[in-house]
Image (cartoon, rainbow, N blue to C red; front, top):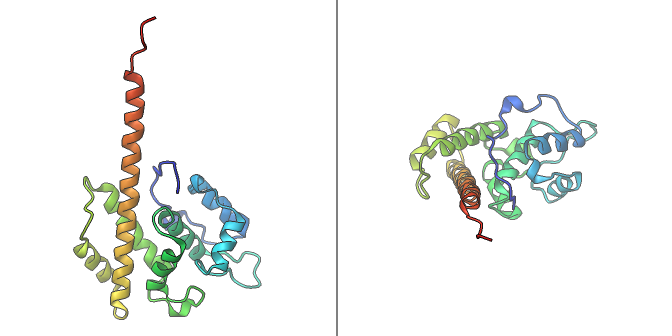
Length: 193
């Protein structure tokens, strides 16, 4: 689990490179936006071998695409909450077999756009409900215009909502603890000598 407070918003699609990347560039990009994660080549290779994320494009030096970045950003938000096997199951809800993009129900970019909307909603809310989200799910399903695999995408969106809520709750708890610790330290009087 990460111990630092994630105070920034998620990376936007516009901030992601539009060109394919070398593994070293992927690592640099992720560590710039998620320094608390300390990404390494071995870490990413293990996610590929475990089929958590898609294999890079064969026979290309720059085999990592925006899709890979999206998958890895999702991992940054899901890892503190879910196990690797649970993340694979979540990805399978919307993308079936990770290395067969032709069977994806929605695109990674569509999923990421929904995630950004969900994240914005959670971070702007004054309180974060621990249940529900049915109206929110319906709105996102309508935006995606899902015809098939409706229940799978519904579950995928529900998980995204819960992950973003958990992320936001953790951030708020860390801010309270951090500010409480700082104010408690400044109000402690030194004993008289």
